[in-house]
Each structure stands twice: as structure tokens, then as C-alpha cells.
Figure 1 (cartoon, rainbow, N blue to C red):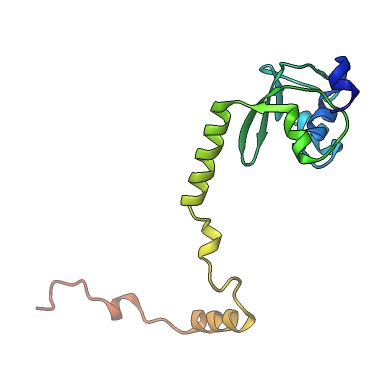
Figure 2 (cartoon, rainbow, N blue to C red):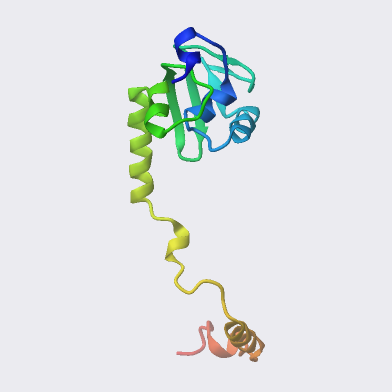
Length: 149
């Protein structure tokens, strides 16, 4: 933690999210805020919004929603153990995140069941040849008449 956390300084939301390691770059954090995926104290936020100790930040990601309480301020990106001291995830958020992770583990990815992948050129030619074959007339293959006893 730097001077910002000791002096009660001002830190922009996009900078704090980057320093807390929620996003890889500051521009990514600003982009996600602009898309409305970040809420501070239940309200939509802008990248330049000042973060204060005690604020509750809700972060929507493809992995689920994370809700964290701000514990310290920093505008400098440091090691992960130091970044983890900037916030505390709420117990409800942890529970929901773990439940969603378990659901993803139990529900297999549909694409994983595809063994062969995309058909080859030979497969395509075989399929086209099969489709060109003259098919028998429906009535020749099946008889639905009552006269055939």
C-alpha cells in the first residue's frame, strides 16, 4: 500500500480496480466500467469516480458477480498478496462464486463432446456423393396400403 492508503488520498475507480488486480490493464478496467459492469454502492459508476474506504463494489465478469468491500486505497499495482489487502470479498459473494464454479465443473462444455472436429475435404466429398445417389421413391420403400394382406 502506498501513501494513498495512509493519507486518505484520492484514487480513481479504474486505477483502483487495476491496482487490486481485477483487470490486467487500466484501460480494460475503464472499458468494463463504461460498459456498466461495475457498480459502486449499488449505483453505476464512471472511471473517474473516487473510491473511498468502505465502498462496496460489484464486479460482473463472465465467471460471475463478485462483491467486494474496499479496505484500503492504492493507485499503484503491486504484487498479488499486497493487492489482496485492498479489498475483502463478501461471504455471500464467495459462496455464490464457489457454487457457480461447481456448476461449471459438473456441467460439461458441449464443444468437448466433438471428437473429430471439422469435416475433412474427403468427408465432404463422401457426403456430397451420398446426397447425389438416386433415392428410391417413398412408395417403393414403404407400403402403407391396406390391400397387402
